[in-house]
Image (tube, rainbow, N blue to C red; front, side, top):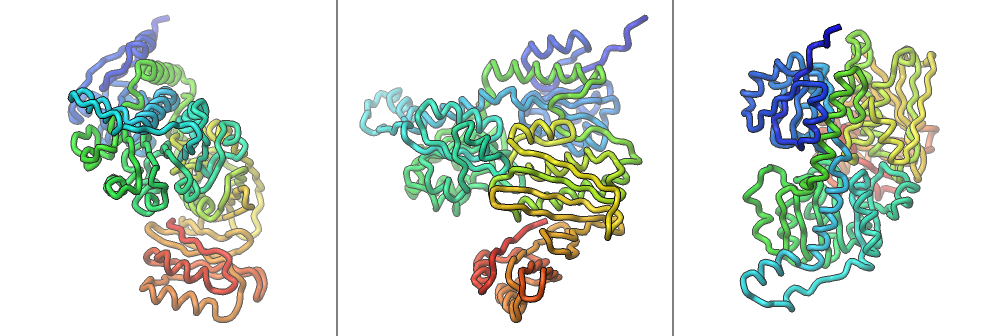
Length: 531
């Protein structure tokens, strides 16, 4: 029997030959680096797979022109340059190599920590200019110093392992790893404020999302020790560049090392003006070993997909039938709102995530909803995009327990989706349903209410004791702050007992006003959430 037509793979960025060799056993490979977007669009229809690194931007136009594309592969960790939503719409699997450069990136972070501690680049430049200024480059030992690690995913965990060899004290923040996992890698979990105040060195290892953009700014830098040295090998934009430069110039921060920039290639930045900031041109993954591992990883996954096997590092949710999607799509959006809400209301370190399906929805394959829930909760603190293929693996790596419950009956609604998260500080549950094709959040903890999450909406949650005059006091504070209340919901367990006030606001309530509400007698907590 004749062989089926060989698959065609287009490679538009340079990758290691080891990956090409894997592909050549099963497919025709065309290497065409440096193509313009319109040139890729013109030829992509011929190919079954596309491999890129960071240079090629895989836009919706390219994806929609790829009528035969089965897979888009990013030979590296990030997928910032791939329009994943467009790929999902077109039924194209997006894959990456999430662990290929883990060690390389971790080693580069350690290298920059050492360079900061011993002023290595500055001393090198000085001596090569024929100046022997030994006394100007007095350094500091790492032994005994506190290293704050923001994000304990793949790279952050590897940094922790290596930092222990320097006898450093390790603290970290990542709400989506268990206390047991952090202890296993030698890290004491703390909140962000404590990490900022206690660290001698800080290293970031979280993704860039709308939630993490500007994660460290002037407010955060005002809390740190004046001897702090900070390293960013994760993503440009996590640190406010202008605030960092000012903090160093004002001697509120001792120095920084930055390997990543908001726009790359970057040849002009405010960071370049300050000698106490070390910069490198995104070298985190620039080792021979990392490039070989990443290329071979994506090549093997592409071959698996061509053979009808699942990819081990798929980024997006695999294709589901249009009939099932019609039913599930509103619940995927509802799951996103429930996740954002429960994640922001719950405090402490996560232990267990429980997903409950009641009513008609329990009769369907709910794996896509489960993936949406886990992905929504991890969003903003995992460098890996979570989907139906990998959510169990990622949850297990982070020490999280995922429990699902299904019941075909539902007392009050046709279907009810509940997301419950157990943390070191207690249990939070939120539930929602779909009515008239619109998402409604109908339960928060033990309180039944009805909230409709809308784009750009802000909700203020106040846990308090029900008593006369409370709502009026809150209304006065929001009014004095010139913040408009569009709707109000109040749930209570009994008269003058525990109660929950939910205000839908047209704009965010300033922190000062939030503190004023918290100062009202018998108010236990105040939280502002954007849904």
